[in-house]
Length: 233
Image (cartoon, rainbow, N blue to C red; front, side, top):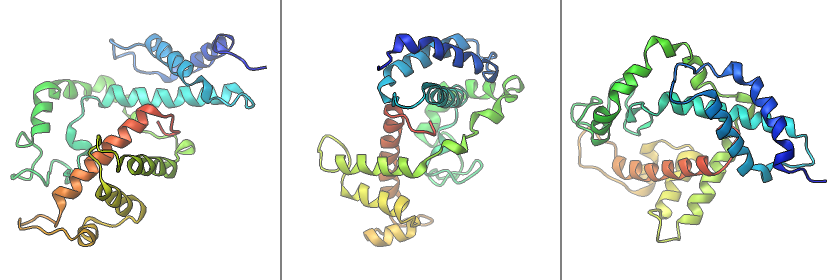
């Protein structure tokens, strides 16, 4: 006999209580553990059909809650981070390969918007009272990570969109994805394959075209993470 969500909800509540001690985010006043519990219950309700009812519910539920906890902590701590952190032009440290000064500063439009709207909040979040939780923010659960599955999912999505004119995706996007993530070629080899050239000093051939396609790939990846339950989310 199939079990419905109302029947299983008390079990979800019990498992959530086990994770109360792992919250450690009471310093964040606008979002409390009770808020997290409600969000998780809604998430499980919406994804309830993904549970294989021939398998025990508790392990599946615990994994979902753990992943949601990691994801929520990451979001609460990093939603004010500099846009440079995952930018293609990040040269490491405070360097940038996009700006003329080669520094991460307001020469970049994305940085300028961040500095105006989020920089103060970012610096507050780096204060000591929440640094005690920093070790948990980006700590992955290695036992659950399946990067290959995610890469295959991104490729399938890009391939399906490459023939749909409503998306800004074409076959070159798919080629760059394959060369970057399947063949693991560096940018110079990708540029040679695609026949890219440059007249700019200190710029690798095709750097701008490649980065634009990678930006599209990144957006597809973000959409998949929001839409699907991958083990490392």
